[in-house]
Each structure stands twice: as structure tokens, then as C-alpha cells.
Image (tube, rainbow, N blue to C red; front, side, top):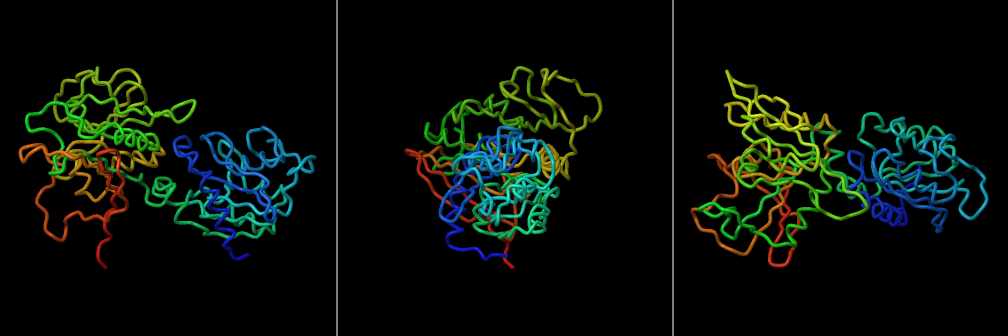
Length: 393
């Protein structure tokens, strides 16, 4: 095994830049970038653009001129060893890839086999693939073929680019981001009700970017009834827009059939099993799915752990939660928030205005505590990104 070098980190940093180009489009697959290098010469580079399309390794091999335009398998996918022209051979080259090359056949063929057939000398991976269908098998296949493999170069950055993919395979649940917006005095809506944009256009555009990278956007029935949101993506990032799954927690099926959340993309409604006769309000238009879930212990709201299990089974990687104070408090108290995205607007709403999160009385040792990850200004608003503080010990 060849030890990683500083030059390896430089090439891997470029591969991560390429991987980030798939931030909004690869779901439910990970964002992956790849370079093929011969000494100091870049032979080809590529990234995984969309699920079902060629993986990053195949894109890089095509850029190097050794693969045709097939679907990304082995020889049947356009393999052309010895083709003429600059960069037509990658034999003896080094491959930098931000995730372990796959070893199974899904919608595309195994990339490890293609790299072996191409005759590369060394493969540098940022991370092992946590998918149990791979999970080190791609690396072992490369090594068995005599290819030197280094693992762990810029691994933290590679994982940070795909937090939901790693979370789904390692913890069995999506990565949960809870978005909240508040005034300087920690309030979210005027005391008398009514519609009010707390933040300006720049901050709201930032929310769109978060929505666009998410697998699903979740809210509660109370928010839908109060604000009638669409919860869709309106971010122009390419020739097409991927609309995340919209998820509504509606234990008693209170959301009316004409709600805007049911338009513009797939919607899943989680509800509780009916207790006795319950009039069905015809909540679900065609194309809207309704699924029953158990209630939390004590009967207040749906079991959020089960919500996450169900969403993980649907290959939801990153879950974006926009909701009211009661549901936000439930997520926080359950300890299920991986990232708190908090927008602060420079105004005061007063003590009688709606609170940020409805938390029940907790002992001091159980208070949700966070570490500040980043602070960014958007015109007059500020965005704080926070992570739960690890428990002492």
C-alpha cells in the first residue's frame, strides 16, 4: 500500500470540488468526484451528475478518452483500450475518487472492474463506501488485482459533503436539518397572528438552496393550515429541477384537499391509526400517499423515530424540516436534530409573540445544547448553523 502524500491531498481536493457539482442532482446517490492522473498530468476528470447515470469514475475515463458513451459498465459500456489520441490510455495512472469504487451492479456496472480493466496502477479513496453492497469490497477487488489502494485522504471533507448518505447507511436514518427563523427576541410570528416574512430575500434564497440539496422536506399539519406553503424548490441550478419528496405529519388528517403542499411534486402524509369512527376529509388528491404510523409514547404526535426509519427505507438521505414551535420542540427533545439552521432577523416581536420551540420542562442536564458551526450574513439577516454538543464523557 502506498502512503498518501501532500500531492494526494491536492488532487483529492479537486475531486471534492467536482463532487460538489452534484450537490442538487445525485440524490439518492452520493456526490462523488474523480480524477485520473499520470504523474503531474491530469488525464481526465468527472463527477456523478444524476442518479441512474454514469458514476464519477466512468465520467473521468470518458474524459480521458478510453470509454465510449455507453451506460457505464465494463466492456459493453464502451471500453476501448489502446484508442488513439492524447489521454487514450490510463494504464499505470493514479485514480483519485472521493468514495470507494462500487463493486456491485445496480443501475450502472461495477466501477472497480472498469478500473481494473483500464490498467490503472493506484487508486486513492477519500472514504470507504458505507453501503453494505460495497463496504470495502470494491477496495478488496482492486487490491486483489494488484492495484495499490490508499484510503482516508480528506475523509472528513468527503463525509461532510454526503452527511445523509453516511447517516442512512451507518445509523439507519436520514441526516436531519431543522430550519427555524426568529426575531432578535427569539420569536417567530406576531402575537396577533397574520403573515409576516421575518427574513429578507437573500436568506430565503439560501433556504431554497438547502431545500434543493435535500431528499425530503418535512412539515406539520399546523404549519400547512396556518401558512399553506408549497414547500417546493424554486432554485434555478440547471436545465431541470429535482423536487424533493414533501412529507406532512398530519395525525388527524386535518389538511384540506386543496392545500398547495399537494402540488408540484410527490407528497407523503404520515397519519395516526384512527381511534373509532373518523370522518375522512378526502385529504389526499391523486398521487398523494397516506401512511399510518404509531403515536409517540403518551400520545402526543407521531413517533418521530419511526418517521425517520420509514424515510430511510425510501432512500431519504438529507431531511429538511420546516415547522412550527410544537413540532420543532418535539424534534429537539427527541434528540433527533443533527443540524440546526437558524436565521435571525433584526426586529423585535414582543413577549406575547410565538416562541421558537415549544419545549416542555427539562432538567438542566437534559437541556438541548449546541456548538456553533458557522455564521453567515445575508443582507440584514444572519444564519447560524449549529450542531448538538456531544454529551460529556
